[in-house]
Length: 364
Image: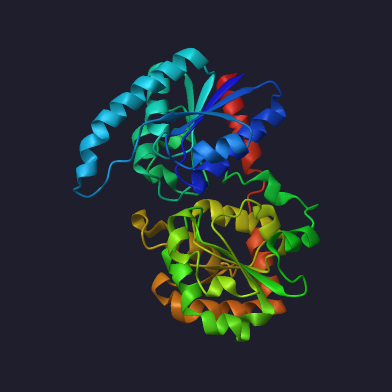
């Protein structure tokens, strides 16, 4: 079986893509899998690290505001479609899977036109422009939320949930090893703060603004702080990052270690993050990004808050409220347990297996 998996741009697209590839390899040992991403984006680094070959397209998104960058969009799109056709002819896939992001557009477009089996895996409650445009042309659309027939043809939709990284579910992850990896005290509770693979300015700024709190009242708590690639220069020399109980990192390569020792996770409310939190039953404080379409991260977060499975802090209240709340929560065993149990009840642990089966159905 020959499979192309296309898309990327952020961890929210890349990690489900790699999970699907690994799931297919488990079922079909000799499956040949090729990734197609966008040149210069993080998938070009993360996919080879996961052991898969990747081809890059010279594609970028269309900016929704007036900008000179849009002048190059038609040229890049033409080049990308031409290269996607070349990849399709040479690799001869049985199925092409799109996970969202710039590169999935040209690749699924040419695959559908050539009548190759196609599937979209949509992670969000509000799909991006690429997947909305492709919906009528692809064969199957795997989704993580109900009521997606607002955007996609109902007969093509399969409710599966989002696949999460298999490494995160390992019960054998050593906590002692994890504490050593981050250089933290194993006798302290741990708060993990992640603003997505690229980072979140609000969360980063809050660390700087709360230096006194984290060095005094918060000194008995470990903080793992993922800064993100976008904000490395701005925050790498932060005084907060020099505290002995704070571990600042541009990117966390060993999320299995980070989740293994986290008592509370502070994060955005992206679809993949929500899936990981519920699958692992983590107590969390969610800060929905205000910079997303239809404010869908707030909708994601509210679904957990209504089920008493997470707490919510608005983006413009982070400096004032986040760390006092995190310190209070991490010391409240009863609330930690309640949030964790309720998060677990919302999990869709069989998502990956269902998506792989949908892919196999198309191939057959």
